[in-house]
Image: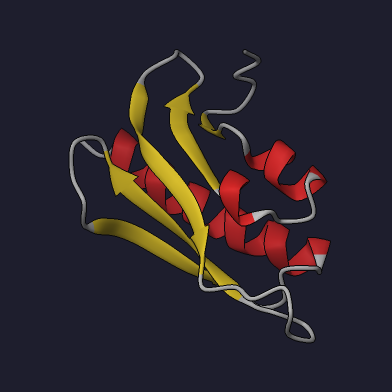
Length: 99
């Protein structure tokens, strides 16, 4: 597995390549060093709608409550999807690197 970023959303590229299949809308969140932090998921999107939005969520390892979430304006927009992913990744990284 290629962990090239400080915080990696494993399975994200496969989810996007699938056309946002609900069955692939989640995976592990792992640091570059291989530390498992928790799970990510994409929720609240309906591909039957025009310009569906949605939300990314991060759940800590061993917990069920959402730690961080970020709204996706339009799931089909690479820019909006990327901005939302960048924001939730920043939140996870700042939390993880906090003293």
